[in-house]
Length: 183
Image (cartoon, rainbow, N blue to C red; front, top):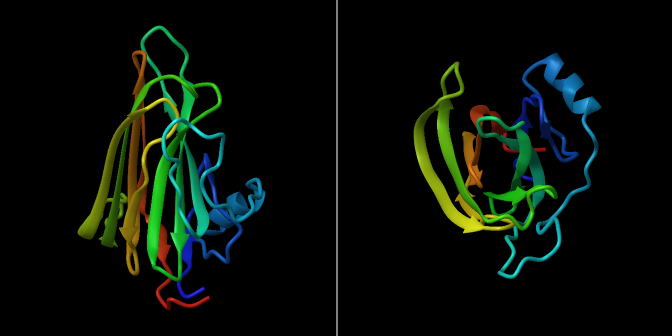
């Protein structure tokens, strides 16, 4: 593979088994204890009535999106799935409902930024390009595809349904192209 992603894994993130470099020893320990996943190609669950999102390459991130509303317990509403294809040098992502919320009409928003550099707080400095998907569906969002050959990704996803609302941000600096672009 020409380009590898470096991931500093935090709570709720699962990386595909790639040769990933991590930012800290604690991140490496988290990655080692995370459940192993095989290299997957979307779609990941049963078919819905419309075209399913598809992404080529390896899944490099799966992150939970929790939602809540006043007077109710928060619930795991969806997952962000991010794939990277080293041969086409593209990132591809979609938001997928959990089994508990599958079939419930939802509004999804998914934003990807290709950041040239990152602030200490995970902000994006000088975004080269971005991709935005806004969608309403009972199962999955459409896919967002972004050329990604250098820098880092910043990802924001949100979901809302039946008064529940939730969002998740993956700061810039957690998914980055290795500086040498080699395995």
